[in-house]
Length: 185
Image 1: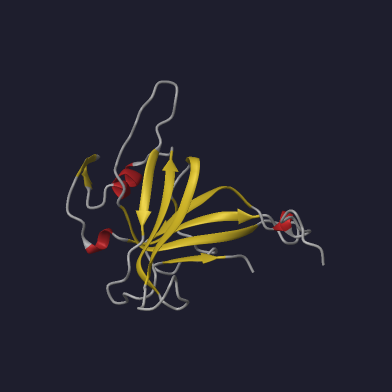
Image 2: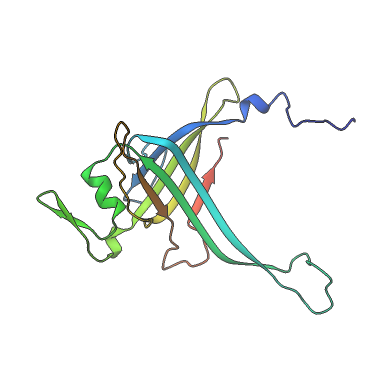
């Protein structure tokens, strides 16, 4: 078999991730495509799902370089960034964990256990295996929007509220990483 000079195959058109996707949130831990929860709102500039895993290399005496099996995961951080142009009071409250509103005036407060969002999900689209598009589901668990809160209002432009949702380990399970990616079957 000859070595190809590109990665395109007859299946390539059926495996392309397209468009910005939609962000949903749900207060309960039973997220499904049939019951996705609440749509966060319209976005501009796309959405990003990122998992950063810090892996430490263990260097035993006598090794002259990396040794297979001598790696240890030290830290896992999963973040979903949504760039909202649909600004609602509910979205502003979600962007400011611990905040509350009285008569539509939002003020800060402490982050309580009930502030965490059970699921924040980015539903994207993979071009279809049979000519139809299929969803790819990128899910975070136990989330807070803990990025900086910033609203920039420019003339002749729309404000974009960037919300960075960070997943958190369950306090009852410190080994199961709080994220998943469900590829279409």
